[in-house]
Amino acid sequence: MKLRTNNIKKLSQEAFDVLVIGGGINGAVSAAALAARGAKVALIDKRDFAGFTSQQSSNLAWGGIKYMETYEFGLVRKLCMSRNKLMRSYPSTVKEIRFFTTIKKGFRYPPLFLFMGTLLYWVMGNGFTRLPRYLSAKKINQEASIVNTDDCSGGFEYSDAYLYDNDARFVFNFIRTAMNYGCIAANYVSSLGSVRENGGWVTTAEDGLTGHKMTIRSKVLINACGPFVDEHNQLTGQKTDHRHIFSKGIHLIVDRLTPYQRVLTFFADDGRLFFVIPMGPKTCVGTTDSKVDDPVTEITAEDRQFVLENINARLKLDKPLTENDIVAERCGARPLVVERDVKGETDWLQLSRKHSVDVNRLDQHVSIYGGKLTDCLNVGDEVSDIVERLGVSYPYPLARWYGEPAPQVKKEFMHQARLMALDEMTDPSSSELLSQRLWRRYGAHAFDLLESIRANPQEAELLIENAEYLRCEISQAARREMVTKLDDFLRRRSKISLVVKREDIKSAPGLKDACKILFGDEADAKWDEYFSNGKSGRCLDKSS
Image (cartoon, rainbow, N blue to C red; front, top):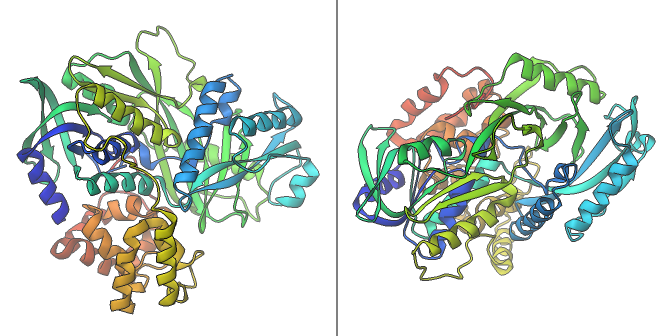
């Protein structure tokens, strides 16, 4: 907790070039891009980092193949290039995965026509991934016998990408990058509003843990509040060209349904895309797409029934999935961008996940609307260019702010790992060698973990069964990852609460030890806070 305590002190003691409000993907990449170039940056979020929309995605980085149906070829091309850039920059984290798509008889387009679309999609992505394949119903049955092909007219297979870990962990790594370059970031700090004063911004903020109020001064204010951008603009008196409408999406996580390391894709009964996504020892199923007025959403009985009915109808399972099979749930509101002056009902089902950045040059205010994880690197660069035009100069304008360390750094890490026989310490329950996992999660900071294990081999022990987190990783999280509540660690720095049932987490012998490492004397209070917060046995994750 020392990192957060020290940063909160600095927020009110220093003056900043830029204050970023919101620690989701848009705010995280903005802070990382600006801080790496030498700007003096602060970032606050009223929840944990990635504690709202950015923790509720499908964990996919895809080029938007569905937008081809609405002829948004420019957007598809841009997203494909963004996907390729992510895969090149994060080869250990953002990986190619095959999408195995089945088409029902009578669907609005025949399978061969859709397959031709995947070839165009592949070309628009510069052929960066493996070639698509056309699939007959017989071929689908041979290669994925779990798929129900009784009413199938064929299908196709193509490639996009997915996150090996979870979305919130990916977002936090940008926050940590920003802090490495001097950004003063703090979670659970709310903005109560901002006013212009002496040519700059004065933001009143409140520490959500203590109630302490503070003022934060900055030249430029960036509103990266995700679904709450419009709400915060009302506090600051900003008028913009865009606004948000919201679409609710849910996923159910169950025990692994298939050994295939590929995404099974269908069209649900109402014509919307429906996925079966691998998630380590589990499978993520969904999603819904329903219009809502409030970004704070929850899963309804109808939502669960929709997902369960569709998955049971499309897979040949030994027995139908029921609510008792649900390990965890994800529920979030996707913020979709529309023009503010658009009148009448918007056809929200046709809206894409593109982003828009509104700039008030006179007030030096930036609002980031919409967006998706795939396009995050472009958002960071775009925002840093805008801030420069608003008068903030960069000591290091060409600094690279994203990507894994250079290949020679990884080579040296793997060499040291082999010499100390690290992979022989991999727990039998793990599906990934220990050296690969530590490098993927921590990059160059994985050397610190090697040093801990050399000094004490017990640091390589798993503390929670099936969680794939070592004792030394939890110690590092306590030092570097601003874990403020137990949910921060179980849900966002890791995906433990997504793949381990709540009752199993509670009974895990090592969790008490983990709490002690993370919170010291506050361990019991943090434990009680997490397990007495009124959540059911499943992880609903409405908000943090």
